[in-house]
Image (cartoon, rainbow, N blue to C red; front, side):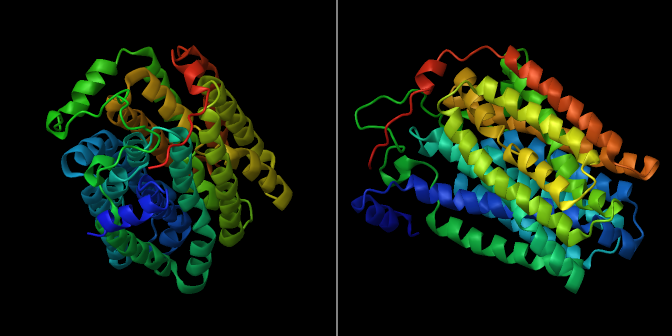
Length: 437
């Protein structure tokens, strides 16, 4: 609707329209991740109001994570067939409606329909796969940095919104915290409807950083070549590839040690140790601030250094920080130290993982391949969301879950070095010069 005149206005000022698409994608992923993280602040309020156990609520959240991840490969197909704008608006509509209707829920099965099904599918359509597709379609130069920025929005939305949500829950009840998510979904859907376009060619542009007359390194496959069987064909093709198997395994551990464990259970964990919901959510917000810096820095580093070594340090530091958490005594100093080390690499693993997948499988397949890798991430998150809740119900403590996740991170740090060094790593280490369009 307004994309063509806005693009022309920006082009006269030397600004590429890809940055507008990236900005709307950033806001979409920010809102979606806030919706995904909000239920973690509602474990105890829902349990008190309806008498549901931590394990029961965690079951709904675990299924949500699984659907969130399994939508990834099919979201890539939807983006090819129907375009970015349609997928973004549909995902925002599902999330906004699901979150609005949950305020009227009173039965556990309704929680499964609204939070597991609608929230899982809606957020899955606009998850990290969206960021990977936008970065690969609209950017040649600064691709790693863009992936880092979009990835940072995912963790920042999950964590930065929580202190405000916890304050609203404490003063006005858990239903009040739903309102900002619903309003945000509506406003960003309108922005996407007006301004998002599928590819640079739709506006007569080249991707950012691609010069006229140059041949693209890996042209995108036409939309007609993809259908809903394509993700399964791609999975069959890559299922014996060592790089894919290692990336999927390490990303399973990534989800196990972030979304499923800390995002879902941290406020409840702090409550078990005498810390209220608002200060606990403030610690999560601190993690979000560190993560915002760490993930953007990770994107910058992934354009310049060996991505395998970056992942080695990210997983190793995360594992050590999880071992530390039960011994932090849940003081401001102890939790602050945890928030700094853990937050810096909350989702800093994504830019190197996307870069390694792109180097191994090419730009034409990276959306689908990363979709399956991301599915492994969310299956890990679902495992931890349910497993930690089960452990808490059975043992009355989260400590075994924290130790298990920390040990898994150390394993991930070791196996990631078995990935073959990408042939283009040396070239990738030299940053591309930006082009003006």
